[in-house]
Amino acid sequence: MSAQQGTESKQQLIQAVDARDAMLREISLKIHANPELSFHEHQAQQWLTEPLAEAGFTVEKGISGLETSFRATWEGTPGGPTIALLAEYDALPGIGHACGHNLIGTAAVGAALALKDACPELPGKIVVLGTPAEEEGGGKIIMCQDGVFDDVDAAMMVHPQNKTMVLRGALACVDATFTFHGKQAHASSSPEKGISALDALVNAYVAINSLRQFMKEDVRIHGIITKGGDAPNVVPELTEAVFILRASTVQELETVKGKSIPCCPKRGRRRRRNRGYHRGIDLCGAQQ
Image (tube, rainbow, N blue to C red; front, side, top):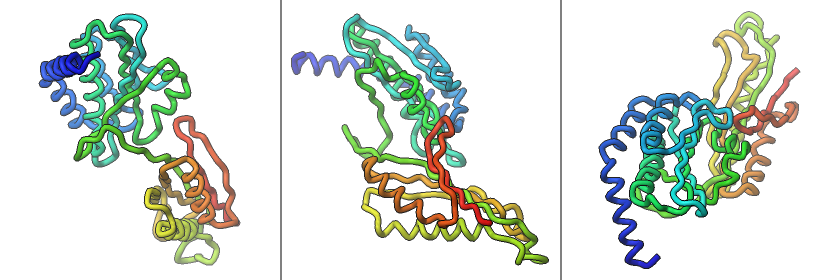
């Protein structure tokens, strides 16, 4: 393709996107106004697949056993590559679409429609993959393990940012769940009979937090206490915190895990778990 042909094709794509501007804005705003959490993105799935089906894409919903996933396929002329455009559309608890997944999902749909409109003889396949649960659960991981990406030659997506970037790095990450078991007792009448699982958790939390100054600049450690006890006058027998550990490489992530895990009491029992939808670390501090 010559430089002139490339310029002409780009202009055709721009015109194709502009022709659908109002529709795409409406979809994005509807998804933004109706945030749905991971694995519950039913409305977003419907709004994103409707225009693809109307444009002649073959739409499959619920692939890889994920009810809110989808795959929409269109083939121009045979023999070319298969290009996947990835759509995200789940929201965060409490703050909705703070990560702009309403834009990511809509952009994937808009790009696919524009390619079909502007390049009807395009050699190859365009596949829009609806990947649910990016925020919590890892829909892409499940779909990848299920072979959805096996026939894909290239996968692309966009993410909102305050500047334009062609490429950017990513961080390897893993969820870490810290669970502590103590012994319940009344905190006023017989505190000496209790063992506080909350004390153990707080000590571990502080220890992990103190690691920050000894980590590389690209490392991120952030977490919350998801269970701190049942009542202030009861010594907590079960507490839990969830962290996300991030690093620039898988190798560096192993180093971060190696420093974070020992922050649990040595009397604790450590095991890995796989919940089926994401992989993490479950650290159980069992106190006798």
